[in-house]
Image 1: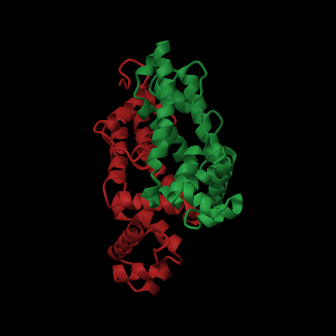
Image 2: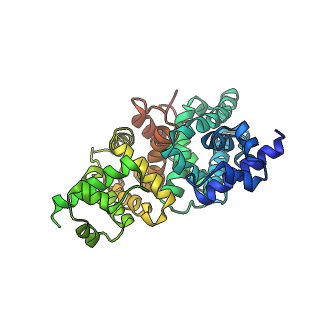
Amino acid sequence: MAPRKQQEIFDATLALLARRGYESLTIEGVAELSGVNKTTIYRWWPSKPALLAAALMEADALAFDPPDTGTLRGDLEALVEGVIALLTSPPSSDIAVAALGAAVHHPELNIGAFFADRFAREQEIFERARVRGEPAATADPLMVLDLLAGAVWVRAIFRGLPVEAGFARRAVSAVLDGVGSEGGDAA
Amino acid sequence: MAPRKQQEIFDATLALLARRGYESLTIEGVAELSGVNKTTIYRWWPSKPALLAAALMEADALAFDPPDTGTLRGDLEALVEGVIALLTSPPSSDIAVAALGAAVHHPELNIGAFFADRFAREQEIFERARVRGEPAATADPLMVLDLLAGAVWVRAIFRGLPVEAGFARRAVSAVLDGVGSEGGDAA
């Protein structure tokens, strides 16, 4: 399938997910919105969960390139800014929330694979920091990313509170410098 | 209503939520499972979201007392252990996941009020640390709790990965000491 056609199918899938939720998402609806024949869609993705999983992983709308700012701190701040943008600006915030809602009810969506794919690419950030000899590069990348990504989800989605300016810088400072140290995250 | 009867209604509400999901939860079902007349339930909680919001806030099954171990580090570790237990042991993990799924689709559940209520009580931990003169007590409590609670959600629920032994200690050390410092969260 031509890449552009594939992206149109993914866009339609994510738009319908965000608008109507997973239960109301159908391959027929995606066919209608994208203008692609539904038998063509079924040939490539044999089920709704397969189509949605592919869209989450491969849609340009959710594309992800690990930042490369020259320092671990800068890279992590850029990464957190990216999660903030994803979770606070429509349509990506509607897509993310709908995908989370669907994922917790439908293990067949295998959202863990989505996070594993992102994590594999995020590790570059730590590898480059190791090459540069930064001390924090010895940290456990999974723990650092769980803390930072989790903070944005809790603040923006669970609490429904604003993510204030400086949140990314302060979150990264907390994890790299510690809040108990001088120069840490003082209130 | 007698407190014990109220708890039976809340238990039935959360059990049905965990078993069947929010869409299939009905006050009739809660009446049947709890053995309480449905008109009695409606008199106290006029709608399904009102009943579920009350159950999430007031059920003994989700009761929460801020730990008091004598140090901020100990209290935060105990808090993280509590979130790990909540999110990895049934039935509370099923309840939490179903509640999250419902909350993202149904803003009328006002899950933000649930988190605000918890946060109001968690702040005690930081107030006691301030009285003791601990340096980390000047940290922003909301940021610290967003990082720590978020890490458990991302690891256990989003990634679907095991929360290894020592996770709470390592997560708290990352936030209090920083991963870039000596004695930090080295891999």
